[in-house]
Image (tube, rainbow, N blue to C red):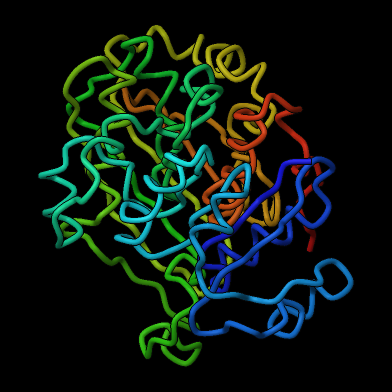
Length: 345
């Protein structure tokens, strides 16, 4: 069994990790930390986990965490970069669900996150945890930077087009929407039901922290510079992301081949589902599941290809993808603990 520790277990990502790991056939959670809830049984905070875990939240203890085979960091930015290197030095592997190791350019990271990076060495060594691109590197990684939720939906949707150089990389548009759980579990007036219910808005339109991560991933796929406009929106629902992506093809004659291109690119990916051409993926079709579901569109004779990409922001956009990375790192079935269908209704 893989002995697992979780640092920062009281947020939505933490409880989602616990939900997935509760029935994982080859992993056992041996420690979960929370400074504010130390001593409280996990099942008291999260009654859905009654009967699955007999753990209490504890204060972070580096010696106990270092005894784990793998530690997930489900913490705000700035925590993992200070603690993860010590655990790695002790032989523990790490999957960081925060943004600490996602962005290679640390000046860019510091500008967006408002602090200098404190682990330059591991920022360089970390493997970006998008399995559909970096699976081979993830297998041997000591530290995996789990992708953000928006970047996962956006990168997967654009990936085949950019890898084959079929679109103008300077004119990419990602119009994305997320449920309220993407903002975390902290109490905020702007996230109260009375504030967001029966309403819909864009936010971060002048620039969002996920933009440099998205740009970095798309540039790797394109093999050069890209120009991307990314605008996130808040939907009055709990879970889910829908990203409507737009790109202008270089040659309209290729439209007839795009469906087969997507199907072939993701044919061996257990968690990417390419729907029939013209379908409209729904966020509820991936609710609670580790899937990215997508479909292609074109309006009349337009040179613009439209890709609709949906994920559950807490699963493929966070905890599920983190467990997928763990499975790859330990050489077990990539779908272990993740093969349940989505919840409907």
